Length: 288
Image 1 (cartoon, rainbow, N blue to C red):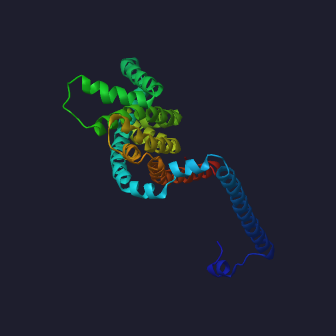
Image 2 (cartoon, rainbow, N blue to C red):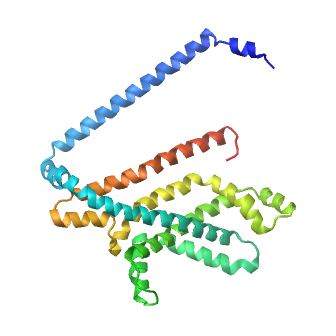
Image 3 (cartoon, rainbow, N blue to C red):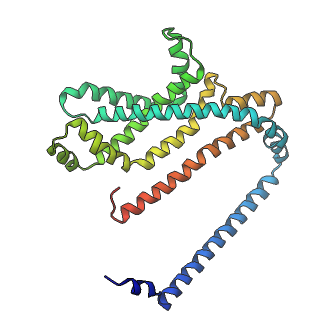
């Protein structure tokens, strides 16, 4: 070991200092070039769009600041409904998706009916568009008259859970199958049951492998939660539709879209950060 005095007295060599300065200059040049190219492309796009024949009509119809500011309040109130549905649906999707993934990973002929049901569920609801699931759940189940009258937000949440749990189940199953079989064998040799092996060994490692894919599914659900408006729920999209009906102007749709962008942008950036971090760990030989 080197002594603390030697560590404290260490200074980078002139060659290392020159390399650092070169890297700083290269980084600065790259940032300036990226900024300049972005400004040029933006200016060209603005000039092209502003000089189109119908730009004046489009600007008045879609980008009216007065109407946009007036619609912010009602649309934000509707966005709170979307947030509530999103939180509830995300928790339920995580639970149901994990259950389906576990059912599909059960081994042995005695569990074949459960595996078959889970596979049929995931195959069917991954193939059916979410909009059709919303119609089937929101209008079909209440028509059976076996449940008390429930708000449209409730049925929209159920439809989201049914549809997205199929996607999340397949992502989780892929992560669980990516865990090396030796991990299961080692856990069973230590006396763990099949359920304990899944809960303690397989599922934690499998989830870690598919974190970026799960986060992307969550980002997608953040957008699709706006589709519950087709059932009559007064969310951000429905509130924008009501404002459009009052003003005969489409600016409220732009406001609603911006709200959804603001809602999803932090998770999008977090997904990129987590993905880059996992890639660095994998390239460095760490455990992902």
